[in-house]
Length: 273
Image (cartoon, rainbow, N blue to C red; front, side, top):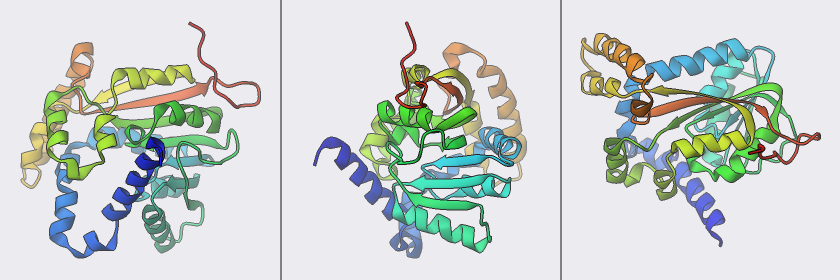
């Protein structure tokens, strides 16, 4: 088994276990593998951007949820009127997402087990693609050209990713290896990884989120939380305009559009130097 196959096998096993029945039945084990969920109590600003993008862009469009996980964004896109396809390498994730869609009686969404680096879809199949916290699981030299191949003319890709520059965040990631695969930890995105997208897309629009907002996490179960979070969001809205501070952010959201492809929509071309 080569390194690529071993990496993908590890991803399948990890995410099947994360969503499997064993964790669902054991509350102690579930908390152990989801102990970082407290930090997502403060991700309101980036979620709002993503949700607004879905609501405004999706009606009448074809959307691909690239590594859909639990299917949360796939279902939101379907509710917003997109013909939605969610893919994931984990069969358990796909099965559970499909079950959620059936419960809601959503007929404009499907879930498929696919390799995100080689999806097997036709060229230019999707008007919109959502990549929510997935690129650091993938080989970008395969993922970016695949995304460029799949995007239809005039389409857009929204990527939401953690950043690796903040030493405190990286320390926490190293301290909690049970929360992610080793490959994932080692491939949290740097700016050079984001800028690599410029080889495949003419437009890369980048925004940064969350630095001081994380100070609100300890107050998440108190009446002070909402006010504190708003206070820190206002501070971050200023700090995230300063280039040398931006890299210390927890998350980045970047939009990709206008893929650089040949006339047949295949084989994304590198930009001329």
